[in-house]
Length: 475
Ligand code: GLU
Image 1 (cartoon, rainbow, N blue to C red):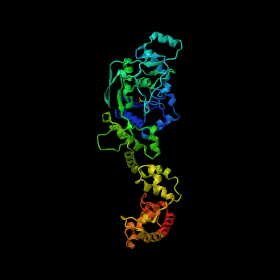
Image 2: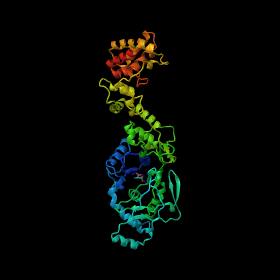
Image 3: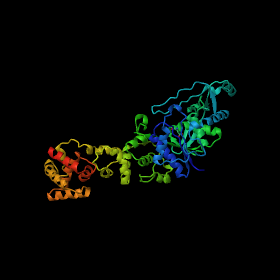
Image 4: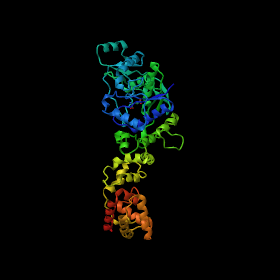
């Protein structure tokens, strides 16, 4: 049978890293098995609806290269793919489930849901007294216009059992399960009902989702069984953690995909990093394109221990991707971060100096701030043991450098480097005794993106000479 998976996000307005990982694994499971990956928007919780949120979902998936075979925008044979557009389809199944004994009509006021500290719904053991109302009587009350919901009926004895591909055999007492609402008074299904109906009608073979759904899956299985439908294969994923105790959560200000993009991480690096957040290839290889992952991904290499989101590792990986970018592409992406550079700055030379030295585009601003304005510094900055420089050396070197640079006509890295190197030689000095003072004079900083001559190209001749004068005046 052809594998079919689906990503079923609620349009909340941002893409949580855990959700993106779920989408990725669903996509890879489908593609590695030659199957189809669907996108379904779960927007039945109208209270949580956020304007523009579906676009964020589309844009994010496209940006990282997760392409869907069926979905709201491109259609498919199993649509509609937006839950609110499927509204009329659920009620007949809910009534059918009542007939089959898997649900009942309830006339109680809706109970408020409870949530834990992480914002997950607390599963309670509610047993609904309405399930004892004889069906004929319930139907009469409905015909008389009384508002009702349809709740799941659970025979509270015995144990439920199913297999999860990551967590193994899951056994839960039926007594633990809540007789929750499946169809609300307004005719909208709850998630607990819609996911079963939709996954069945859309022919989903593998349900991949967060481990928070492990405890409610027995309720879904009861429905599959009562309808006589085949249960899907379950693949529950452990949470993505911020540290050993805490889940990564937008509520606590933790990064979403959009935040990472804004900080200058590349989509390719983010998705590569996320792929390894709970799955391993079984080799030492760490850098993967999504196309490579499509070839090698396998469910049996999913890990059930929670993965800790390690920003240091992601930053390292992003650096690898940045260094591998064609220079032209790096320049295109770096340019917006160089928008406030003075007009005389050679941005291409600056980008070339930055590319091997930044791990995110967000680091650029801090690396180049000295270009806009020379920071105030004290003469002690010229002291550097390794370079064999001190204030005396700088006093000697800077006027010589000024002379050479004033006479210099060819203003590029190689020519400048050759000129300063022969200056050192001619004066019996080490290269560093010329280059280091020059670099300090140009930048006012101990560490810079590039050496003295690279900075000179970026700053241009006039600015370099001005900065040398400033340095001489300090000494
Ligand atoms: N809309 C649900 C969520 O965002 C989908 C869960 C599932 O994949 O079934 O958590």
